[in-house]
Length: 102
Image 1: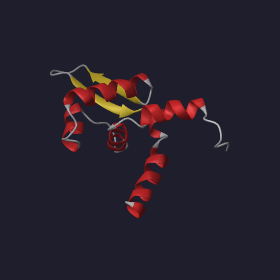
Image 2: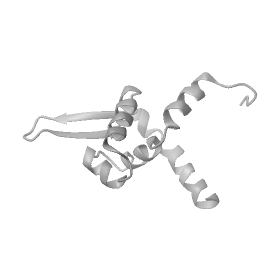
Image 3: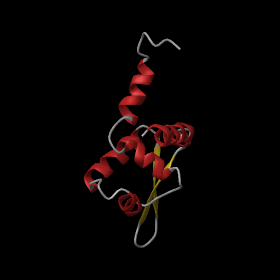
Image 4: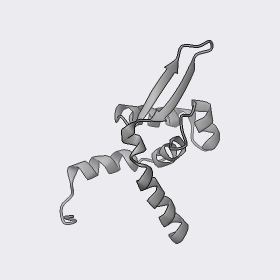
């Protein structure tokens, strides 16, 4: 790996994943599909507006999928795509690092 030059792909990934709350949203969704209110309950300090914004960004990046169920009342769930699920080893390594060093 060449650490003397910035890789544009790495930079794009860090811009997306490095935003506040994004890593926590991904970590929660690694546990399976969640409704908006479920995400709110697990991260009560995160405002509804910012949660919605982060979910839209992750959806646009094909990391999260928004599933709408045609029920009454309408049910909406968020889940990781295959691309998002591939972050599981990364999240696990960050967890191990945090347990050892923070």
